[in-house]
Amino acid sequence: MKTLQSITLLLATLSSGLVAGLMFTYACSVMPGFGRSSDRTLVEGMQNINRAIINPWFLIPFLGSLPLIATAVVLAWRGHGRPALPWILAGLALYVVAYLITQGINIPLNDRLDRAGDPARIADLAETRRNFEDRWVTWNIIRTLVHTAAFTCLAWALVVYTPARSSAAAPAADERPPAPAATAPR
Image (cartoon, rainbow, N blue to C red; front, side, top):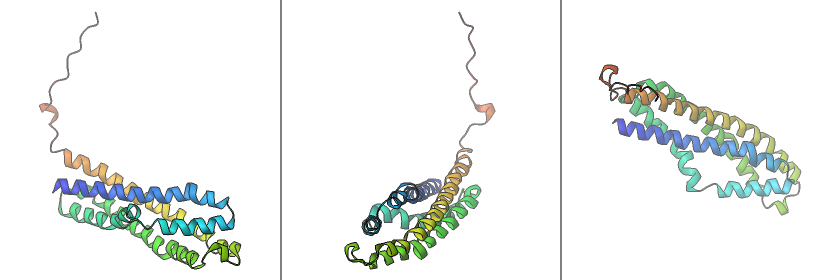
């Protein structure tokens, strides 16, 4: 049970960290780069990115984090991870909030941008950009912070869980071998 708990919590932490890192990448480089680009470059680039991101390398951590974190909650509740449980629950709640932001705001904006069609045929690229960029960037920063907070809670849960798991295996102070005697310098 301890091994399953450890592996599940580790995978939940890693997958949520990958998602937080991806959102951070958009916030720190992708969108600022597009912000310096032409209207057509932003619209076409985001349309292409939004199509390309639908792949297993993204979807497995993005969609897989929720069941992994939920499983970590159940295993901590039923097993030896009680000290980590509040942190895992907080990580789950935060991940759900970030997921809902993505589903409720960012994806609909992406879909609307895609429905605008071929950038070469969009009558007013500047208007299309205005309807997308500021709101998308703002909510991406918010979800980045929330994903990062979820990852931080799960990482801390690992820290809290590890001593509880290994303390039973650690020898008592009186059972440890004595420290080596210091030798006088020659």
